Length: 116
Image 1 (cartoon, rainbow, N blue to C red):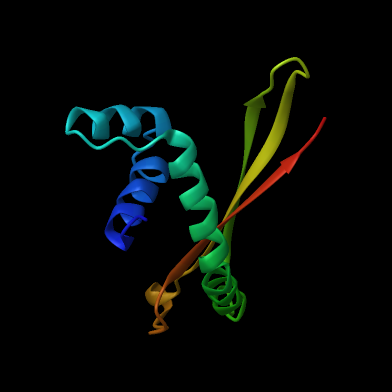
Image 2 (image 1 turned 90 degrees about the horizontal axis):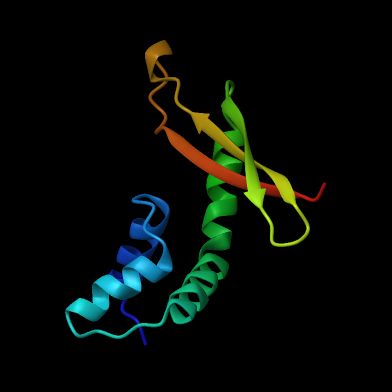
């Protein structure tokens, strides 16, 4: 069982600091903690499932804004034998403080993967 602090550390290291599961596993092994990368991946999938309602509420809050900033970044995913695919990383931002709106800013990220 992983503590919330460990799970937060894993997710931030993976998605903010761009540390793959394998690299994190090696780092933990150096201090005597053996966590397989498949276990880290399962914990993260479960965490994403548990936090999905919070993410949906955040996205709804952003959509309530009078103005939404957005960005679509195409990302090439390398495949094994099937070639590459193009995915899309979407960012939605609500932040109108420069116009005097005192609502809290918020950002949501969406991922869409499509086959060629």
